[in-house]
Length: 318
Image (cartoon, rainbow, N blue to C red; front, side):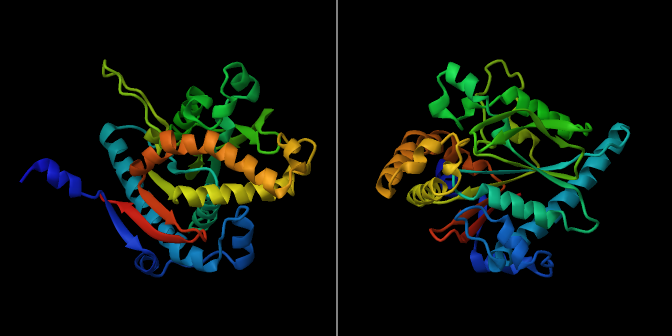
Protein backbone atom coordinates (compact mmCIF):
# COMPACT_ATOMS: atom_id res chain seq x y z
CA UNK A 1 0.00 0.00 0.00
CA UNK A 2 1.16 3.54 -0.76
CA UNK A 3 2.58 5.06 2.44
CA UNK A 4 1.16 8.44 1.43
CA UNK A 5 -2.31 6.91 1.34
CA UNK A 6 -1.89 5.61 4.89
CA UNK A 7 -0.67 9.01 6.05
CA UNK A 8 -3.68 10.69 4.48
CA UNK A 9 -6.01 8.72 6.75
CA UNK A 10 -3.95 9.22 9.90
CA UNK A 11 -5.53 11.53 12.45
CA UNK A 12 -3.10 12.83 15.10
CA UNK A 13 -6.07 13.57 17.38
CA UNK A 14 -8.46 11.48 19.40
CA UNK A 15 -11.89 13.08 18.95
CA UNK A 16 -14.43 12.93 21.76
CA UNK A 17 -18.11 13.78 21.70
CA UNK A 18 -19.28 16.13 24.43
CA UNK A 19 -20.69 13.19 26.42
CA UNK A 20 -17.52 11.13 26.06
CA UNK A 21 -15.38 14.05 27.18
CA UNK A 22 -17.65 14.88 30.13
CA UNK A 23 -17.27 11.32 31.43
CA UNK A 24 -13.52 11.90 31.80
CA UNK A 25 -14.14 14.32 34.65
CA UNK A 26 -14.49 11.37 37.07
CA UNK A 27 -14.15 12.72 40.63
CA UNK A 28 -12.63 16.11 39.79
CA UNK A 29 -14.37 18.47 42.25
CA UNK A 30 -16.33 21.58 41.24
CA UNK A 31 -14.66 24.51 42.97
CA UNK A 32 -16.59 27.39 41.37
CA UNK A 33 -20.12 28.50 42.13
CA UNK A 34 -22.66 29.93 39.68
CA UNK A 35 -21.86 33.57 40.53
CA UNK A 36 -18.13 33.06 39.98
CA UNK A 37 -18.76 31.33 36.66
CA UNK A 38 -20.99 34.18 35.49
CA UNK A 39 -18.28 36.72 36.35
CA UNK A 40 -15.70 34.83 34.26
CA UNK A 41 -17.73 34.93 31.05
CA UNK A 42 -17.02 37.48 28.32
CA UNK A 43 -19.69 39.41 26.46
CA UNK A 44 -22.03 37.07 24.53
CA UNK A 45 -19.91 34.03 25.42
CA UNK A 46 -22.22 31.49 27.01
CA UNK A 47 -20.83 29.89 30.12
CA UNK A 48 -22.75 28.06 32.81
CA UNK A 49 -22.29 25.40 35.45
CA UNK A 50 -22.92 22.59 32.97
CA UNK A 51 -20.25 23.85 30.56
CA UNK A 52 -17.69 24.01 33.34
CA UNK A 53 -18.62 20.55 34.63
CA UNK A 54 -18.66 18.83 31.24
CA UNK A 55 -15.82 20.62 29.43
CA UNK A 56 -13.50 22.44 31.81
CA UNK A 57 -13.33 20.01 34.73
CA UNK A 58 -12.08 17.17 32.47
CA UNK A 59 -9.54 19.68 31.10
CA UNK A 60 -8.48 20.50 34.63
CA UNK A 61 -7.99 16.81 35.38
CA UNK A 62 -5.96 16.31 32.20
CA UNK A 63 -3.80 19.36 32.92
CA UNK A 64 -3.07 18.13 36.44
CA UNK A 65 -1.68 14.93 34.89
CA UNK A 66 0.48 16.90 32.44
CA UNK A 67 1.81 19.25 35.11
CA UNK A 68 2.75 16.41 37.46
CA UNK A 69 4.45 14.42 34.68
CA UNK A 70 6.43 17.40 33.41
CA UNK A 71 7.60 18.30 36.91
CA UNK A 72 8.91 14.77 37.41
CA UNK A 73 10.76 14.87 34.08
CA UNK A 74 12.13 18.35 34.79
CA UNK A 75 13.59 17.44 38.17
CA UNK A 76 14.94 14.14 36.86
CA UNK A 77 16.75 15.89 34.02
CA UNK A 78 18.23 18.50 36.33
CA UNK A 79 19.54 15.78 38.63
CA UNK A 80 21.02 14.06 35.59
CA UNK A 81 22.76 17.30 34.58
CA UNK A 82 23.82 18.13 38.13
CA UNK A 83 22.00 21.47 38.03
CA UNK A 84 20.63 23.10 41.16
CA UNK A 85 16.86 22.77 41.08
CA UNK A 86 14.99 25.92 40.14
CA UNK A 87 11.29 26.55 39.79
CA UNK A 88 10.00 26.10 36.25
CA UNK A 89 6.48 27.32 35.44
CA UNK A 90 4.09 25.25 33.34
CA UNK A 91 2.93 27.41 30.43
CA UNK A 92 -0.42 26.96 28.68
CA UNK A 93 -1.21 28.70 25.39
CA UNK A 94 -4.80 29.57 24.43
CA UNK A 95 -5.36 30.39 20.75
CA UNK A 96 -8.22 31.01 18.34
CA UNK A 97 -9.96 33.64 16.27
CA UNK A 98 -11.34 36.98 17.39
CA UNK A 99 -14.68 36.59 19.24
CA UNK A 100 -14.32 32.81 19.70
CA UNK A 101 -14.13 33.01 23.51
CA UNK A 102 -10.41 32.77 24.28
CA UNK A 103 -10.61 35.18 27.20
CA UNK A 104 -13.42 33.22 28.85
CA UNK A 105 -11.54 29.93 28.46
CA UNK A 106 -8.34 31.44 29.83
CA UNK A 107 -10.09 32.92 32.86
CA UNK A 108 -11.99 29.70 33.64
CA UNK A 109 -8.79 27.69 33.45
CA UNK A 110 -7.01 30.18 35.68
CA UNK A 111 -9.79 30.02 38.28
CA UNK A 112 -9.97 26.21 38.27
CA UNK A 113 -6.22 25.58 38.28
CA UNK A 114 -5.64 28.09 41.09
CA UNK A 115 -7.90 25.96 43.32
CA UNK A 116 -5.95 22.79 42.93
CA UNK A 117 -4.39 21.53 46.13
CA UNK A 118 -2.01 22.90 47.34
CA UNK A 119 -3.20 26.17 45.73
CA UNK A 120 -0.67 26.87 42.94
CA UNK A 121 -0.10 30.43 41.76
CA UNK A 122 -1.65 30.86 38.30
CA UNK A 123 -1.10 34.00 36.23
CA UNK A 124 -2.74 35.05 32.97
CA UNK A 125 -1.20 37.25 30.29
CA UNK A 126 -2.66 38.22 26.93
CA UNK A 127 -0.42 38.92 23.96
CA UNK A 128 -2.37 42.13 23.27
CA UNK A 129 0.17 43.85 25.51
CA UNK A 130 2.90 42.94 23.04
CA UNK A 131 1.24 44.64 20.08
CA UNK A 132 3.23 47.58 18.82
CA UNK A 133 1.78 50.94 19.95
CA UNK A 134 -0.62 52.49 17.46
CA UNK A 135 1.90 55.21 16.58
CA UNK A 136 4.37 52.54 15.47
CA UNK A 137 1.72 50.64 13.53
CA UNK A 138 0.57 53.81 11.78
CA UNK A 139 4.10 54.69 10.71
CA UNK A 140 4.56 51.17 9.35
CA UNK A 141 1.17 51.17 7.59
CA UNK A 142 -0.02 48.24 9.73
CA UNK A 143 -3.11 49.64 11.49
CA UNK A 144 -5.37 47.64 9.18
CA UNK A 145 -3.36 44.54 10.08
CA UNK A 146 -3.52 44.92 13.84
CA UNK A 147 -3.56 41.40 15.28
CA UNK A 148 -1.60 39.94 12.36
CA UNK A 149 1.77 38.40 13.30
CA UNK A 150 3.70 41.40 11.99
CA UNK A 151 1.86 43.78 14.34
CA UNK A 152 3.45 42.23 17.44
CA UNK A 153 6.77 43.06 19.06
CA UNK A 154 7.89 39.46 18.76
CA UNK A 155 11.37 39.93 20.28
CA UNK A 156 9.78 41.47 23.38
CA UNK A 157 7.24 38.64 23.67
CA UNK A 158 9.90 35.96 23.21
CA UNK A 159 12.12 37.70 25.76
CA UNK A 160 9.25 37.79 28.24
CA UNK A 161 8.52 34.07 27.83
CA UNK A 162 12.19 33.17 28.01
CA UNK A 163 12.53 35.05 31.30
CA UNK A 164 9.42 33.34 32.69
CA UNK A 165 10.56 29.87 31.63
CA UNK A 166 13.99 30.39 33.14
CA UNK A 167 12.45 31.23 36.52
CA UNK A 168 13.32 34.91 36.70
CA UNK A 169 11.59 37.06 39.31
CA UNK A 170 9.20 39.95 38.61
CA UNK A 171 9.06 39.86 34.82
CA UNK A 172 7.08 42.74 33.30
CA UNK A 173 4.46 42.49 30.55
CA UNK A 174 3.01 45.63 28.89
CA UNK A 175 -0.67 46.42 29.46
CA UNK A 176 -3.13 46.92 26.61
CA UNK A 177 -6.34 48.96 26.83
CA UNK A 178 -9.30 47.72 24.79
CA UNK A 179 -10.95 51.08 25.48
CA UNK A 180 -8.24 53.21 23.86
CA UNK A 181 -7.22 50.36 21.52
CA UNK A 182 -3.57 50.95 22.38
CA UNK A 183 -0.73 50.09 24.73
CA UNK A 184 -0.93 51.92 28.07
CA UNK A 185 2.33 53.90 28.38
CA UNK A 186 4.57 52.97 31.31
CA UNK A 187 2.08 50.48 32.76
CA UNK A 188 2.95 46.84 33.29
CA UNK A 189 1.69 43.67 34.88
CA UNK A 190 4.33 41.84 36.89
CA UNK A 191 4.64 38.06 36.69
CA UNK A 192 6.65 36.68 39.59
CA UNK A 193 7.57 33.01 39.13
CA UNK A 194 4.08 31.49 38.95
CA UNK A 195 3.51 27.77 39.09
CA UNK A 196 1.36 28.04 35.97
CA UNK A 197 1.16 30.80 33.34
CA UNK A 198 -1.65 31.03 30.79
CA UNK A 199 -0.80 32.97 27.62
CA UNK A 200 -3.81 33.95 25.50
CA UNK A 201 -3.74 35.38 21.99
CA UNK A 202 -4.89 34.89 18.42
CA UNK A 203 -1.48 34.00 17.01
CA UNK A 204 0.30 32.25 19.87
CA UNK A 205 0.66 29.04 17.83
CA UNK A 206 2.17 30.85 14.87
CA UNK A 207 5.34 29.34 13.39
CA UNK A 208 8.16 31.00 11.52
CA UNK A 209 9.95 30.21 8.30
CA UNK A 210 12.59 27.55 8.60
CA UNK A 211 16.06 29.04 8.03
CA UNK A 212 18.18 27.52 5.28
CA UNK A 213 21.27 27.60 7.50
CA UNK A 214 19.67 25.47 10.22
CA UNK A 215 19.99 28.13 12.91
CA UNK A 216 17.45 28.01 15.75
CA UNK A 217 14.53 30.40 15.25
CA UNK A 218 12.37 30.53 18.39
CA UNK A 219 8.59 30.90 18.18
CA UNK A 220 6.12 31.65 20.96
CA UNK A 221 4.80 28.11 21.19
CA UNK A 222 8.30 26.78 21.89
CA UNK A 223 7.69 27.88 25.47
CA UNK A 224 4.33 26.12 25.83
CA UNK A 225 3.87 22.86 27.69
CA UNK A 226 0.22 22.56 26.62
CA UNK A 227 -1.95 24.48 24.17
CA UNK A 228 -5.67 24.92 23.57
CA UNK A 229 -7.29 26.08 20.31
CA UNK A 230 -10.86 27.43 20.39
CA UNK A 231 -12.56 26.56 17.11
CA UNK A 232 -15.83 27.49 15.37
CA UNK A 233 -17.01 27.74 11.78
CA UNK A 234 -16.32 31.06 10.06
CA UNK A 235 -19.99 32.14 9.62
CA UNK A 236 -20.52 31.53 13.33
CA UNK A 237 -17.45 33.58 14.24
CA UNK A 238 -18.60 36.43 12.01
CA UNK A 239 -22.04 36.41 13.65
CA UNK A 240 -20.48 36.51 17.14
CA UNK A 241 -18.21 39.37 16.10
CA UNK A 242 -21.13 41.41 14.74
CA UNK A 243 -23.19 40.83 17.89
CA UNK A 244 -20.27 41.88 20.06
CA UNK A 245 -19.74 45.00 17.95
CA UNK A 246 -23.39 45.98 18.37
CA UNK A 247 -23.21 45.42 22.12
CA UNK A 248 -20.08 47.55 22.39
CA UNK A 249 -21.73 50.27 20.31
CA UNK A 250 -24.37 50.51 23.04
CA UNK A 251 -21.86 50.45 25.91
CA UNK A 252 -18.10 51.02 25.71
CA UNK A 253 -18.17 53.00 22.45
CA UNK A 254 -20.14 55.76 24.21
CA UNK A 255 -17.11 56.56 26.35
CA UNK A 256 -15.39 59.59 24.75
CA UNK A 257 -12.02 57.94 25.46
CA UNK A 258 -12.92 54.96 23.30
CA UNK A 259 -10.99 54.58 20.07
CA UNK A 260 -14.30 53.51 18.49
CA UNK A 261 -16.35 56.37 19.94
CA UNK A 262 -17.30 57.47 16.41
CA UNK A 263 -19.31 54.26 15.99
CA UNK A 264 -21.59 54.94 18.98
CA UNK A 265 -24.03 56.94 16.83
CA UNK A 266 -24.47 54.30 14.12
CA UNK A 267 -27.87 52.74 13.53
CA UNK A 268 -28.28 48.97 13.75
CA UNK A 269 -27.98 48.66 9.98
CA UNK A 270 -24.93 50.94 9.79
CA UNK A 271 -23.23 49.23 12.72
CA UNK A 272 -23.86 45.78 11.26
CA UNK A 273 -22.46 46.82 7.88
CA UNK A 274 -19.42 48.38 9.57
CA UNK A 275 -18.76 45.28 11.67
CA UNK A 276 -19.02 42.97 8.65
CA UNK A 277 -16.65 45.20 6.70
CA UNK A 278 -14.08 45.15 9.53
CA UNK A 279 -14.48 41.38 9.85
CA UNK A 280 -13.93 40.74 6.16
CA UNK A 281 -11.11 43.24 5.75
CA UNK A 282 -9.09 42.32 8.83
CA UNK A 283 -10.32 39.47 11.01
CA UNK A 284 -11.28 37.04 8.25
CA UNK A 285 -7.99 37.57 6.46
CA UNK A 286 -6.08 37.01 9.70
CA UNK A 287 -8.14 33.89 10.43
CA UNK A 288 -7.57 32.33 7.01
CA UNK A 289 -3.92 33.30 6.59
CA UNK A 290 -2.52 33.10 10.11
CA UNK A 291 -4.80 31.67 12.80
CA UNK A 292 -6.64 28.68 11.33
CA UNK A 293 -3.45 27.16 9.83
CA UNK A 294 -2.07 26.87 13.38
CA UNK A 295 -4.99 24.78 14.67
CA UNK A 296 -3.25 21.42 14.03
CA UNK A 297 -0.42 22.52 16.32
CA UNK A 298 -2.63 22.63 19.43
CA UNK A 299 -2.61 19.95 22.10
CA UNK A 300 -6.38 20.27 22.56
CA UNK A 301 -9.06 21.65 20.23
CA UNK A 302 -12.46 22.74 21.54
CA UNK A 303 -15.05 22.93 18.74
CA UNK A 304 -17.96 25.26 19.47
CA UNK A 305 -21.40 25.40 17.93
CA UNK A 306 -23.47 28.50 17.18
CA UNK A 307 -24.80 28.59 20.75
CA UNK A 308 -21.23 28.90 22.16
CA UNK A 309 -21.43 25.40 23.64
CA UNK A 310 -18.47 23.08 23.04
CA UNK A 311 -19.71 20.22 20.86
CA UNK A 312 -16.57 18.10 20.58
CA UNK A 313 -13.03 17.89 21.90
CA UNK A 314 -9.94 16.73 20.02
CA UNK A 315 -6.87 15.69 22.02
CA UNK A 316 -3.51 15.23 20.30
CA UNK A 317 -2.18 11.68 20.62
CA UNK A 318 1.04 11.17 22.55
